[in-house]
Amino acid sequence: MRTFAGRRRLHRFLQAARYPSLAAYCRDSGMSPSALTPQIQHLERDLQGQLLIRGQHGHRMRLTEFGKKVLDVALPYADQLASEPIYGPGRDSRSRATARPQ
Image (cartoon, rainbow, N blue to C red; front, side, top):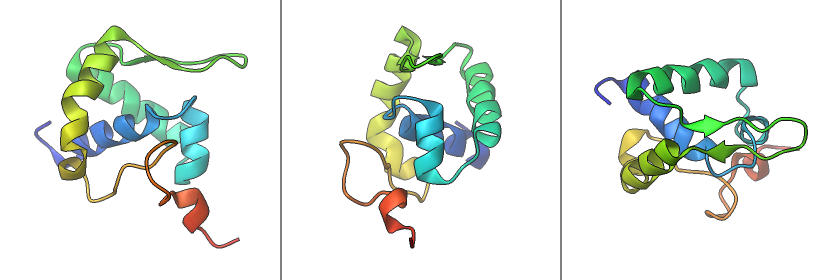
């Protein structure tokens, strides 16, 4: 990714890929689905391939084969893509959901 916005979109994809749905990622990150969806779509256009299959009616979202390849290649560089750490199930205990005041 050549631009900061492109790196940020890729970083958000890496974060969201750890969740069962984009909505679940949005709940934890505080980002609205209406803001995330166009960013994922823009990243898919930039990379010229579909990254994920959105889950519908209780089904989990799934990465496409292309999405898995992008994840495998980009994940080692996640900390360099944005100033935010990667959050999500199975990472570390520093999630935005627990960091927010109740």
